Image 1: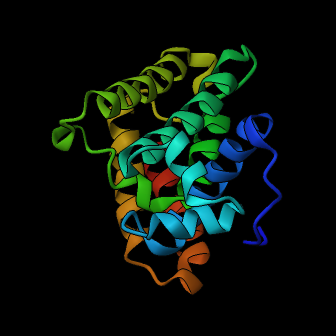
Image 2 (image 1 turned 135 degrees about the vertical axis):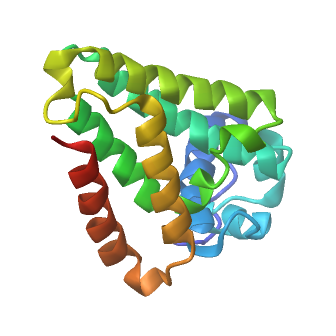
Length: 185
């Protein structure tokens, strides 16, 4: 993303602006944390702050939109009857490493926002769906639960949030392999 402002195309550009803002938010939150300046997201997306606030009036709105987009991708994967739990876990890992800061919010006990609770519920549902099908489960232990996977993802997210960016990819890869070893039989 260039960070240079695009020509104003008015309402016709709304969908493209929204997509650019979501992509910029993922990058910005990953690099600078959830408290990153919102104007940095707008600059990274190449749009004005007005466009940012038209689509996402609050910080929480853009964070929830990023989560929703990630969950939609996971739900699409799970909707494919041939998809496996390993593929789902791989996609979750990719999302986690791209935006580890967001996963800090996925702590059910801390969730007072019903929108976040709904997203957490959707994540549990797709994990439970793949875990309940022995053919999809693959090498994941029979006693592994959605809660176990959720906890593992949360632990990895917390670790990545404390890891300097230059080491994040290698730490993520090593940690993910360890977590998978614990989930497999």
